[in-house]
Amino acid sequence: MANSSITQKLFLALVIFIGAFPVFYFVSVEVGVAQASPGETDTVISDSLSFDRYVENNSFGVGEKFEFDINYGFVNAGTATMEVMRLVEYERRPCFQIVTTANSNSFFSSVYPVRDRVESIVDALGIYPWRFEKNLREGTYRSDRQYDIDQRNNIAFYKGDTISVAPHVQDALSVFYWLRTQPLQIGQSLYCANFIDGKKYDVEIKILKRETIKVEAGTFDCIVVEPLQNSIGVFKHEGQLKVWLTDDNLKMPVQMKAKVIVGSITVELTNFELGEIAEL
Image (cartoon, rainbow, N blue to C red; front, side, top):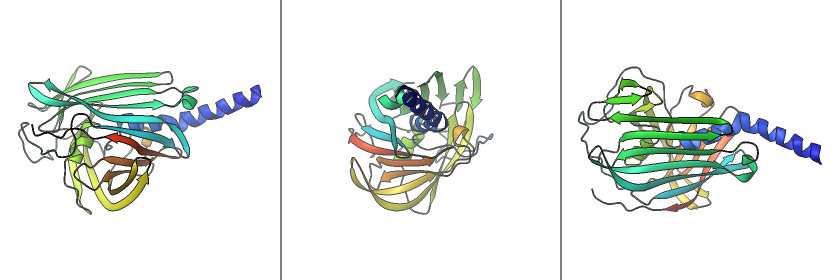
């Protein structure tokens, strides 16, 4: 029995190493949309050159919280949350403090514990970030990264470097909330600029189709979107990332699917609380 238990744990550790790390990285860091090809130019993909833009937001507000199951194939690997925690003042602007977490379950934690947290301070009027922070705790791996974005002057501060960025540039988390405020028309694409871990990306998000799906949280009419990605870390060139958003003004995330190096990830909504959508 002891040898059998050791064998099972070794096998599980191997599965986690080649598959589960992308699961949690995908959920905690790239849960919204992923990057496309890196761009070294500051292409302006924006409806205004002024940082002081206004984006109408009828989609989310303080108090909103989503809970998800993270599944690697047919195995439940853990849970994740996305939450609009509170309204704060930052850079003399009203901002949302938005936090995502990803945690392995007790079974996976016995050989590969995961406790990840990502935070973005997002301008409540313009829906773009001022500050981004991620703290990853995955097995013995530790990573803490933080950067500030001066949206007035189109500059990002990362690891002591000053990097020019496009107006209204997004981070890995804020871009998802910006997407939720946009009209989604089947067959069309949306574009925006992203800044992630010191690199600049131009992102295309394809709006593919309508589909009704059933998850633990209920049955939802959805719009399926596909953020284009190309050779991003553990994702390499493996398949597609697709996100199911409710086909209404809320555009709640109901399901996400992606292929990774080995196997596939499915993230499904299990519970949700709606936030207070207020005019600011």
